Length: 155
Image (tube, rainbow, N blue to C red; front, side, top):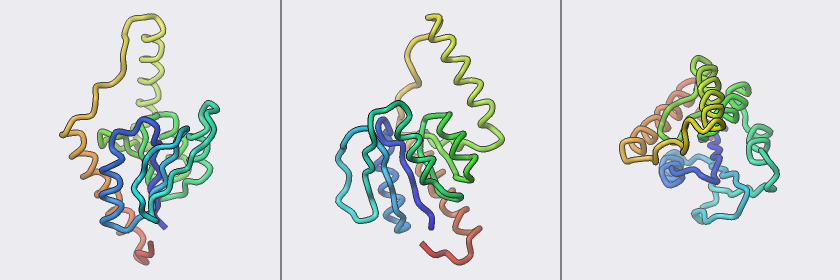
């Protein structure tokens, strides 16, 4: 059964996830280190984990299955979920795949090193409307692709 997992603490596209999931009648589990407001819908669940380092990531990896969808900006979590056969996308709509995850991990490590030396500061730019639109389209595409590959179409 297709399920969407959201690494929710800093996810800027939660409303977009709710909208698409509602259209398809999909379950959504938001995983966070703290309580947050979520829509009062039976298909949307908030899973609060401890504030231990990587607790949310570990919970997602433990529960995600092949052909589930994970929404995260965390490249290492994306890599772990791909290993389990999940589809993974960032909040700007960029899918993480077996073909691009190695480069993404290497870039992450390089940027971490540059931040550590003070060469660069700050993080990625904020999500804009174009990113939100791309995310909506890519999420819809991923759901359609998974459903086409599973002819039983059972939610």
